[in-house]
Image 1 (cartoon, rainbow, N blue to C red):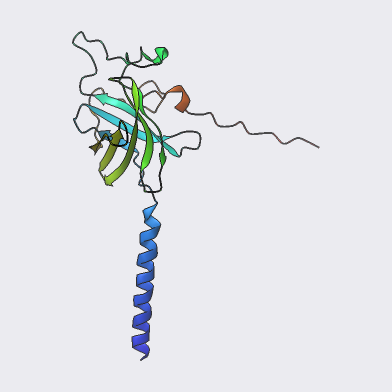
Image 2: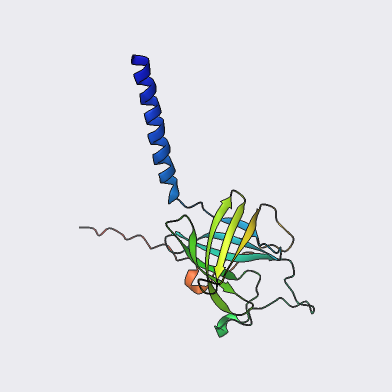
Length: 189
């Protein structure tokens, strides 16, 4: 009888651990940080933590299959509604704007399309360890999903520096690194 009771207790504990373990993982977001090759292979996007508390996700174009036009001039963000951003090159610019974690394990917010200068709703999530799903919507009914593949190599012309450094992408003003607060000195009594 004692063996049967111990067996039933172990089974009950196992079931409870499986149920609690499964629920604990539902709201957890798999960090999408890394470098991703977009579905059509034309660009690589680096996703990283951003914002003052580093709880959001921003994305930057760090490599383009064709970064320059037929005259050898880098492609520019000429359709941007902000005149100050129209001269910036597409290579290195920010296209994913501070996505926030959602209860369903995704990150949601806005993505910038340099082809038309507009922002669109987007959500992304890791589909597997090396695949990312990105769902963009014009309106809630007109959506498209892409699969991005994680890359670990570096292609010629790829920006590898930290965001804001010479050989790195550039964050938009509103997402640029916020300087750490200066420590306050204790007043002498």
